[in-house]
Picture 1 (spheres, helix red, strand yellow):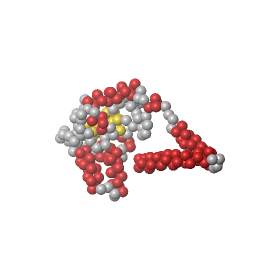
Picture 2 (tube, helix red, strand yellow; picture 1 turned 60 degrees about the vertical axis):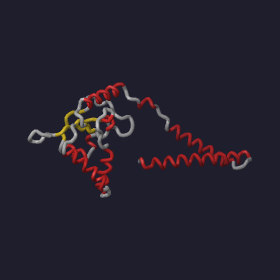
Picture 3 (cartoon, one colour; picture 1 turned 90 degrees about the horizontal axis):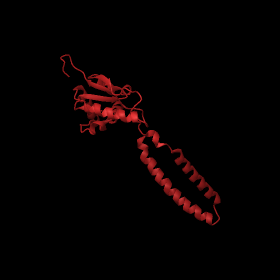
Picture 4 (tube, rainbow, N blue to C red; picture 1 turned 120 degrees about the vertical axis):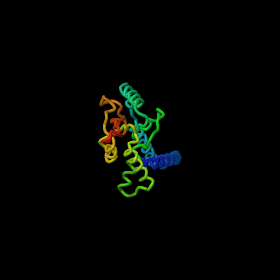
Length: 201
């Protein structure tokens, strides 16, 4: 979907330039008493354009986090502060970054590489990035992993659960800290390294 954004921007700018040129031309013709039907058509197009903008009207106040959301977010930051140094938050690396911690690969590029790998179109660099992720998980290099939407992670969750185990949920309240737009998500599950039979990670 994001690939269409540049095309939409170009079409919007082109439409505006064409509309301006058409308006100047048609108004001149109208003043001369000709092409009145075309002028009416131009006015209709302008009304349709205005209607599109009216369809985009919304109340921004409904996207402001509630007091409960803010409280839950503050509690999440404190929870992360209390965790060991190497915390991997694949869907929200900024949460680690804002505390001066090292950040790691966002989960979306990993999903993209997985799809390319299945199609056989992934490059050597992309395959290497995926293997680096799996290698870090296998070696239990992260002291803790905080995941979103666990039931939608597919094979990435399988990779993680081979070497990490669920410890706790991030939030006690099921109604706080959800996104207001786009996919419904929030940090949900805390995973910690499994111990082998010798008691070592």
